[in-house]
Length: 231
View 1 (cartoon, one colour):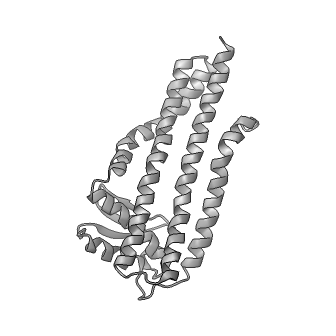
View 2 (view 1 turned 45 degrees about the vertical axis):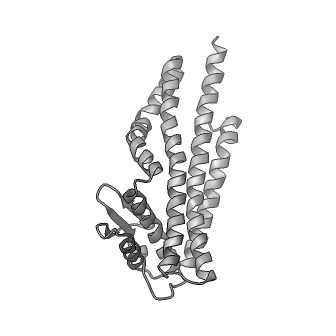
View 3 (view 1 turned 180 degrees about the vertical axis):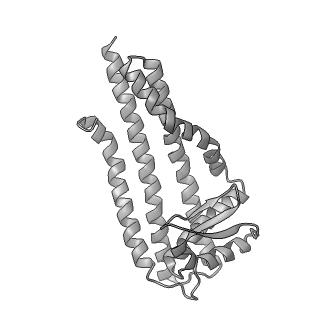
């Protein structure tokens, strides 16, 4: 696989975008974690203010271990912020906290792409476990139907990454608007900083989608090549 030029042709764009996204995140997070919010508002305080402004007093904000482990859990209505984001009064911290608040708003408003993503999670989890067995088993044993079933299950992960894109982009859009409307960030310089932090994070989801599409295409190409030779 690694010595196949087709593999690199199809997967290289996702890998390159991934490296680009990580460099953006690192540089922007480091830069804007050093710039304080105007009123010393931390990530946790910002999230609480934004949630309350939207009538989501029922959403609990918790501190969780790990760097950039921030996430919203729709099952428990909990917004979990990494310790640095939770406690730090920086542009990077409030940007990340606001993004996760955006997911809480999506959940409260039954945002359709978010519902679709949650619906396909079980299929993605199943596909992650079974798809490689079906694909390589069918490939080795010359059983095209089994191998294509594996590709189909791989496709659930690709679908997940594609559905994730609008979910994440919408959460970032909500984050920017809320931070400005609640006067947590003010002025062109601070608003620009928030945009850069959120845009850098968005590139990771673009990279994931491109990588998943490239991998899926590669599996399809090698199956088409193999089984055509046997007919």
